[in-house]
Image (cartoon, rainbow, N blue to C red):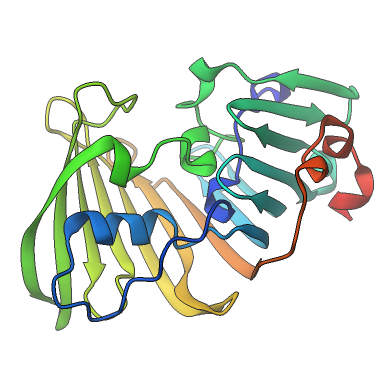
Length: 259
């Protein structure tokens, strides 16, 4: 993937406002309650994360290590710390504006909104996956379509259909979450013709940042057998007291942040 196409970013996974905590066994939980919980599970009023991303395709493999900071829904900054040849590549989101920094040419490039559905750094995650500009709880009509046990685990299955004016590309999403803590298990994404396009699986539930959440997310494209992208969180902290001025073009190119 050319450096100039490095778009969007990794933030979503670690940004934004901490939602109201839903009781783990709420008696009248709704599909929207569940989706808000899933949308914001990795987000906080402010946050810091360290993670790895491993990409496997039929032609090559790639491993990255990443640091990321966020403030509310609209501010985030991430930088690659490994491998050395990509160290320092960084992405900033401030409101609806996104920029990338390419250290080899010392350039800051603004990312057009048309690139939000493009893959990030050759992975199977889109920029929107990483930045989370869209939210399931806001952009889809939803309902609980299954409540019971799968593989001996009590779960809810929620069917999401996009709202007519929602800026999303999927024709349908099926989200399965554990009933006990409303932690996601899988998300199946279907195109507008009803064909399965990709599957996201969540695993390795552990305590990170004071929350129980899946530390590992694996994305498998339906049309590329054997390919996958796996993200694993090793550090996640919330409530850091970050200010808006941290999320600046100046800090986008700070090389000490990628150390």
